[in-house]
Image: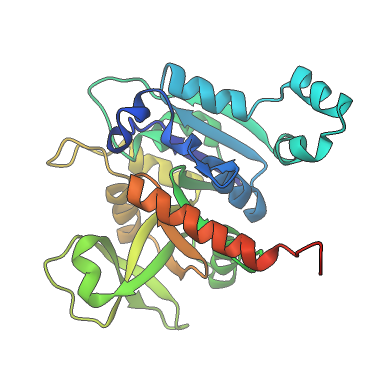
Length: 284
């Protein structure tokens, strides 16, 4: 499969720093948010990854981070700092990156990256991932790898990763309302956008991690803007689900929305707590 990671947002909730720093490049400990998304795509089996960036400086930062810097690598190697550069070298060795620019015009929304990447996707299955959201696992696993395995086991053409929240909090989120298949799998029945009330004790929420077949791109290309003017990926997925089975796969890890300062700070605190549990004290 391939992967499409969206990092073209304006980052308005991080202004004024968002003017210069792409929100996907903000650090979670010493790695940018984007690096976690890339690693998760690689763990799921993607070896060709398209990064859909904004024009200008914000896009340049992302391209620089995910492009090999031979001079810097040699500089670190000459000083015995190979371990510091190793995480970058691993990304470059494990995946090929294509950079696509999303223009700043009258179209905006979460569906545009899949439309822009249509030629890149070709005839392959693809992951569609938001680069400013984070999934953290303390056990070293990958929720995107689990998503791919669950889709294969269920035999569905598509799958959505979902976080679970109490039903009383459903009004804050886009809800993936399920129906149960004969085999017991939860399939997407409809998408509910921040419902006023939700009668179930728990709710599945959309976290912008979707695995789709190539022919799903046509559903994105047929979209018209929502009432707010946005081309929404959820509208395309909902239309696809009316014609095809879409598996809902609950995640194991912690979901963090790093597209706002409070979510980004919470993600750093969570990552630090996980690191404290997994790093062995050399004095032991």
